[in-house]
Image (cartoon, rainbow over all chains, first blue to last red; front, side, top):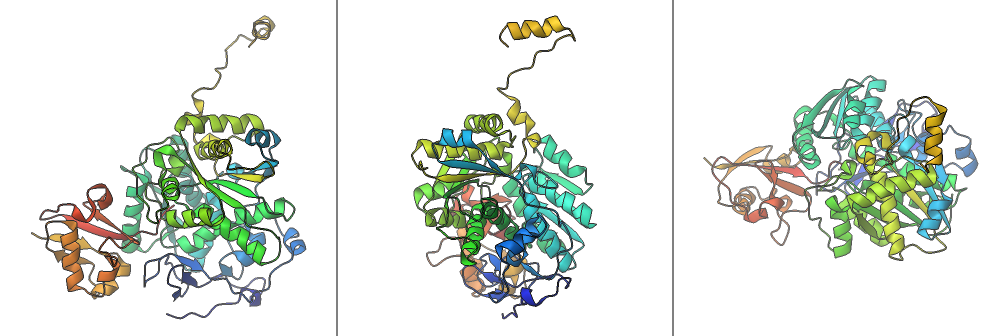
Length: 423
Length: 91
């Protein structure tokens, strides 16, 4: 197979959107732009190819653009002008000095995708790119296999774009994630099984129906959206690199794409310095990537998930080996945390930073605290914690252990009794 | 009745366009060996050089990931269905 690379820089400001070709990460075979995520030669993952001759923007040019993922369009897998989901991205990077003190590091920030637009998780980033790929390929139906956040995002972005959506989730997901999908009126199907069962089913469905399943056959274009989290961190730090980044792992793609995103900005000379050390966190009840890194193996041993961190409950992570490579290659490490620890992590984050994260965020915070306790974070570190989803989606998990609010009559004396009683 | 092996579209090209193959054997490994012998172009995408499952596919025996039921050593019975899907998906 051969391909002609379409130079992004030659496209006019309003040129038709065109996905770029892709190349196999393993055998380097090139594939023409199409809804295909795996190499037809070796079945390795396909990655979009960005034209090395394209003109790259300066810091000032980027800073003058609208605050969305598209301000980094030269690193997203298209030429031409995106048409959907133009306002996703550029979530806050929140200074967290009390968390820094707990971690024993110089600085700590929270990259807060819990307020991502429009569905309150980092999946808005990947779906924003996938929906544009679906549009460019002329697909009328999109979909996904999801642990919840992706379901929300695909349903919302598809509804807005006027595309049909078929969305498949484990039947027992958190109610808020089911409702937060159903409200957009997709064809939502709850499957009796784990996420890994759902994922296998969706691969069979993609073959049968030819839908654009964002994390199946559009996966190459989808995954590139995650890089913008790294791009934003660099810009929001004043065009600097953190020394360490802690991120949750489900399929393992985010860690890998963070490395790629930081690397792209270093290569573009928008920032200088070494890649941040990447640390990946999982719940102990579903920690195949943690085990892979700890063991030094190169093959994932799948597990059957058993954790309240449902958004990370992928027992057979597709990008596990690549995430492990990214972590090892940057000098980072991994942490597995108990469900009790992740609940503590949710409360620590809320009470130290004002950010209410879902269970995955609790895994990130608890993992960072565990890494600090092991001495893996350094006193001079500048650390970013990636919070990928909103706590209002997993309220059942967070409710346990919180102080119960007393109920009183609207009478001054009853409140005074609480105050005087040491409430 | 033999075991049925179902290929994803991306691998069917290596089997002359066939997606469902009837195969014989008493274990998953036997069934895969039978198919590999009859479709040599497909063989390297079923097993690696050490004879283990090719790392970029996942085998499901009656919808169960074979890694949870004994891998290539898992026993099969007449009428069982072995489905192969690419490993790079989801997340």
